[in-house]
Image (cartoon, helix red, strand yellow):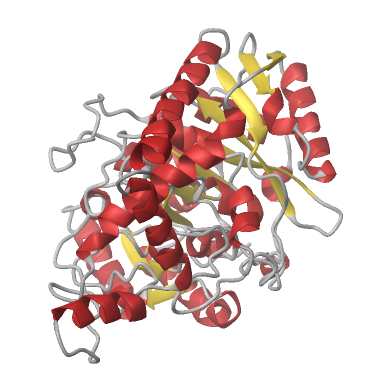
Length: 488
């Protein structure tokens, strides 16, 4: 087995036993990127030279006894909306094509503290707006299971890079399912933590009350390891929760006996692909065999969640992206005669079609005469969604649902139909509206050999519960062993 096929905890074990070196791991991934990037198109910026140099420095410091971090020298990929000092942070947009961040996001500083090596910045939908990674200014990322299919989005570059063995794990961001959906489409594990558990300082904002940095990994244990590093209170982020730092690997018990699992019937309505439905039903049977109690339940306002999400997300996007005006930083048009032209042309030329579409919609719902009818109403429905989840968690430990209604679709299939693309988020957005944690886990393949995922939803700060429930399923099935043709 090649080094790039191993999970992070397997790499750590081999390093501990001195079977491999940090330089060998780094070179293995760099070679893999050089071999496969032309097909997958997962990276915007590759930091090959810096990674190789850092691997040598870390090895020397370990030899000298200056470093004893278990994860020292492990490589990682970073979604390109997470600020990285001295490296381009483009958000896959012409607007920030040449922006080099002068500081590190808090999560990046936490990775540096562990001496983890960044291999570069990963492709995404522009400013995280999209569900397929087709809205990037630079390139269209492809699914390693089938290069004619999308990897999902907006963290599609992160998911595809992990699935293709180009990075052992990656950071992404999830505003309405942007970690979980690509994880499902690419057959890996994607964890969206509780809102506030991981600092958003240094994450370029799309929708501030919904955005959350999370993990994309080969298995659940790696998710627990990476969450243990990046979680924690941050004074630089006023929305950061003051929660005690934990080692999430300690919750992985491989036991769900007595656990209460709710199955919201609204997630299984018309529009759910039959093969996805069958796979989820098999997951339910497996949990029952493992000793969990499974019951159907209801989220009465689930039908309104998608509309609520797009009103709130677009309103916040309109506000957040107002800072990109051609004056302070970012793209500036050369075609202007006055200040009004400078604003108008810089934004028209710098933003892509999907970003402009959401800014316009967000500005509309915030405008005088429409604020009460749309934005205020959406915030009221948001409270109802939160209350519905709260009511269910009084009875159930976790909720189980499909991650997406379908498997990965063809490149170009939905990119010209925004409404159809938005509907693909129907299973994931309620979690973000309520600020809850969710994890997507592989649970099968369809007849074309494309991955299917299911998601577990937990109560606020119940990451330990959903990680253990996901881990137990993973340990009692073989779906994590399914690999794309790229790894065969």
